[in-house]
Each structure stands twice: as structure tokens, then as C-alpha cells.
Length: 104
Image (cartoon, rainbow, N blue to C red; front, top):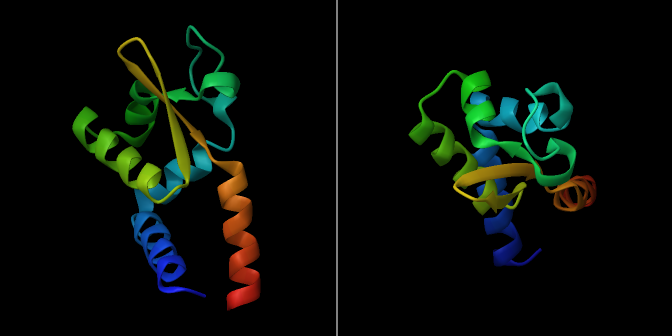
């Protein structure tokens, strides 16, 4: 494993080190469990306002949580108008699982 790979894992574990961010990643596994939105959550992701409401945090805290998960490569963001929608990056999460099973 290269130093860059180690840093990626550190970013992932730091992102998942907060219980609410970990919970959000779990919630995003079932985007249809969130309230209805204009665009289907399964296609565009879950609107930040719905994540914020479920997490019971301020908009700025929800934005920071999602930015941390995005920097770690665990979620992707789609902008629709003024709204940000987030989805799990299933390929990255699967790759992480493979790396962990080989490296640890």
C-alpha cells in the first residue's frame, strides 16, 4: 500500500469516526426511506434538507458532514437548482471493503 492509499483510508476512517456521519451513510443505503422529493432519490440522491431533518442538525452541520463524506469518496453530490442531493458511492464502498479484506 502506498502513502496515498494510507491517506485515503485515514480520510475514510476519520469520516466514519463520527456517529452521525456513520448513520447518514447507513441511511443513504435506502434512499426511498426519506420523504418524497421532486426527483426520485434512487436516481439523483437524497436532498440535503431531508438528511438534515433526519440527523436533527443544522443545515451548516449537515453540509459539513456531507462534505466530509464526499472528500473521503464515500458519497457523490448532484446539484439540482439550489439543492444538493447525495448518494452513496457504492463502487468506492465496495472497493474499500476489498482493500480492507486484503490489507488487514
